[in-house]
Image 1 (spheres, rainbow, N blue to C red):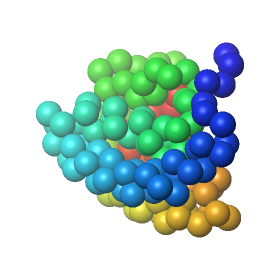
Image 2 (image 1 turned 135 degrees about the vertical axis):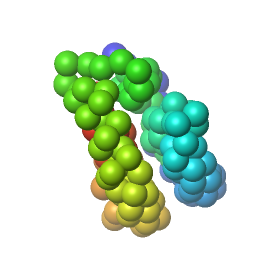
Image 3 (image 1 turned 30 degrees about the vertical axis):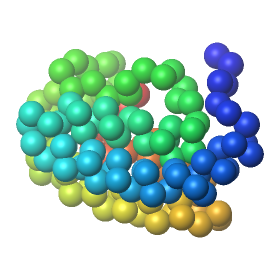
Image 4 (image 1 turned 45 degrees about the horizontal axis):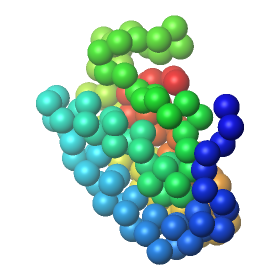
Length: 129
């Protein structure tokens, strides 16, 4: 699949002008939604938008990487994922998000922060996309 992302110059301007602060708002909203059973699907969808909101980078498949109700061959069962989320995922995702966001605020840490954001669905709910 061809990369439909804007040029690196446009993405850099976006990150400096909008991406860094908009992503912080998006992450806060996603985490807060994820704390409720009703809001969890919305929170997960917001988590999947983070790389695009941060740098306008198109995702590999532009399809939701986390699915709440189903399972994939690489994912743990929904029961295991639910238990993990309740015991570990909600607080681990908060710490992971904070660390990734701080890394994204520096030029040197940006690639690592983006990779961490791409792994956020795994930290939140054990989903392997």
